[in-house]
Image 1 (cartoon, helix red, strand yellow):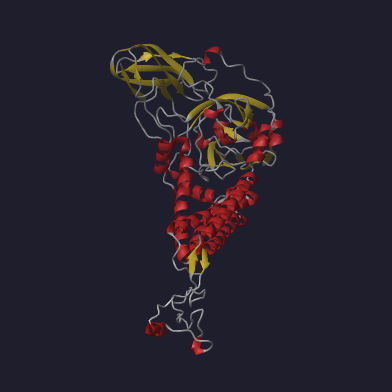
Image 2 (spheres, rainbow, N blue to C red; image 1 turned 90 degrees about the horizontal axis):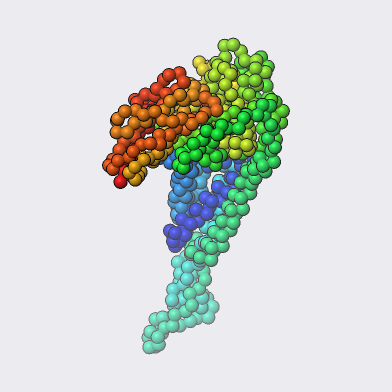
Length: 562
């Protein structure tokens, strides 16, 4: 179908946007029926994450923090909107251009979906059906917005292109005659123009109809909205939320004692010893948080074992339950960074489950897989050395939040999260480091990631302006599974001064510290901190970046005293 190009560009762009929205909404609906992870927008986004160089990922985390995925998804939707608008403009000239563009975009989505782990042919249905719906909407709205018109006769009822004549005349001299313009001129009479006829010219001419555009756009928006809402509901968010709220956590076999009174110094602005769930950092590759129903969740443990194990959520809850205070830290945490938090976790011993399976002596790696296909490689000897390595389903007295791995995640003290803290864990293959690689290893990160001894200044804030006089300097330090023995602070490269340490219930958590008698004098000052762990190691001043196995250096801040 061709047009006479009478449609305004803004209208054509709007048609493209609405058609794109229909494609997205319908694909989300079908993904909810088939497989939520097959939603093409998520598949394309995940492919973009996988293909992004590590240096750009680090920049995104530094720049946008936990909002990096929101920014990426927002960028994808902006690019999609621009493409859809351009396709609408092209389709207004010739609808085949728009259809071809949608087909090309669908091909990208199919490829992205099929490259995801464990993808099947059925997973292409959301993309194919969504693109088909977008094509239908594009053709339909353009047809409603461009109505056919027939080329009018000339003002005097004369012959039109293709042999047509005026409404009052007839072809080839047949029928009653009408005065011609020439005869009227000879008689001195002024010719009167006739009403333009409604007749079709040789090609398909169409004119822009605002009412048709409005009804078509509103219909497309309604389809996109209803399909999108239904798709989100079918994707399991509502059901998983209800299931999580209905869980009654079992009591641990040996409950932990209440936290010591001196574990939290309760200084305003200092990170609390227990990080609230809502404030706990989140760094992962999941663009859309996996929605895993505990009633259908299973964990398979296989590979280099004597007896493969498959556990349901009910099976896990029936095992001996333990709780542990453990601080988790992301390898992307810069010196003084925020990607660290402490919580009381509830779950079962991962070591006990592995012993039930019978791990082979020459196995040295646990390749754990998340529900969205992400993998981590955890050293077997670390999990089996007696530390509180958990398959956790509780966090700070409630079921795991969905963002933090509901229904089950791994928690292994002393290792950075990228090699230990698999969320939404569904599979653990016992293997070897020389035979398998986890997600981050081929991307330039170390295969093993023990957490480094570090410390951070929380008060005062970097760049703050403070009053002269006695000033509190406070923060946290960590050396998971080793413990922090000392923290020192110095101002303007002077003498190191010993900070007062809060209590620590275990070596697997961070520890608060405070220097509360600094006499701040007017001017600009530099404050530095360093920690010493229980092995006697004092953290180095040498600054190294987060890659490949964690940042080092003293946290240093600048303040101005008035």
